[in-house]
Length: 115
Ligand SMILES: [Ca+2]
Ligand SMILES: [Ca+2]
Ligand SMILES: [Ca+2]
Ligand SMILES: [Ca+2]
Image (cartoon, rainbow, N blue to C red; front, side, top):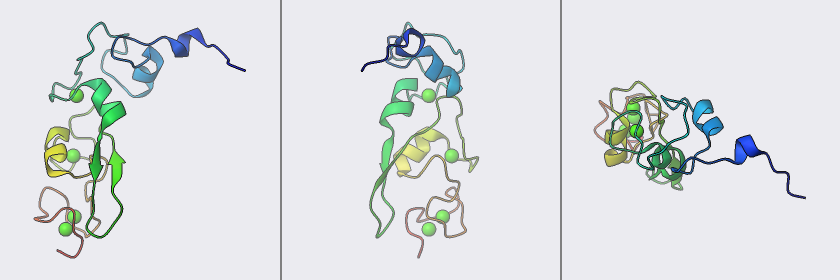
């Protein structure tokens, strides 16, 4: 049985419901008229940050998908903005992606905990 919840089901043009945007702290919390809305101005659209994300591949481990925040430029506070985390392939939710004790911004090998 399909339960139809109009409030949850309504999607803005970027494919994210107003409720989901609010829950995720999108800056305006409004239904978007612009599919490319980028609340943080980091060049990554809200939709992309919430739904696409990118793969994080730690040395010797299975890749996993990480999602950045459409409401924060640097959610994990490691000094690397989400767009830099993307280009480095690091996890925007973990200041120390590989868990070796050195934060991503000072770790010359942020995806290898042996280096
Ligand atoms: Ca953004
Ligand atoms: Ca960061
Ligand atoms: Ca590290
Ligand atoms: Ca490392």
